[in-house]
Length: 278
Image 1 (cartoon, rainbow, N blue to C red):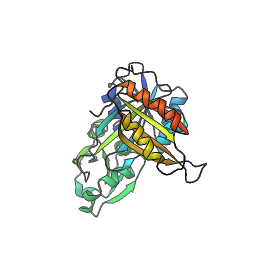
Image 2: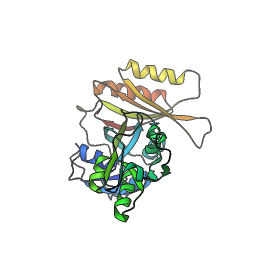
Image 3: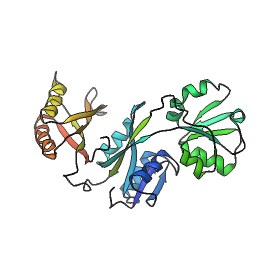
Image 4: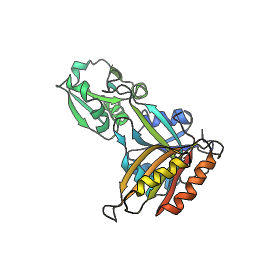
């Protein structure tokens, strides 16, 4: 836990998966600033309205959330921690209703996609894309809307007093999302605890340049856990690479940084933190 953080911004409202991460990573006493978009959450950090942002970065089914990599990079933010959350999608509606009463389901496009097989069994239900899972649950409660259901967490059902019609409706039952805790400065974790890092680098467009760089990481005793390419908009067909590495000793990472500074056109450390996936 990062003791210097008193408030965090999240994409979504209370009851969302980002809200659950805020409680798990910090505590339920942390002040949570609700934002409808990741851009708004980052703006609140830049404007010093919050101390950190909790941001989903990748999902075990859907893969990387590429726009969030760009947000971290473009605003020179730093990852200071991470947490993995088992995502369980639940269908919920106002109390007194059954599954047969539901005509439409509103939810985030990703949640709808992850529950596709469940709704194939209920073709009479219309699926409608919305901004946030828990926000739909909140709206159903406030407006007392019948015939409409939300896909959200059990916490959302508790907060907004909704009845769960079906539990764990996601197609793939083991569905994890990785969240990162992001700040403007990377000054939270002691080097004795750091065993993971997120890095961005660019390479010459030459044959074997990426393979050579990955061999360097291996020679420095770093374990590559993630690699993601992102196109450079201002330079067509040139890419930046975002990688996550783990290591047993911080000195191994320091050695790798020294070599990368020589071998890459541009290298940026996006975060040094404690590995949450052990």
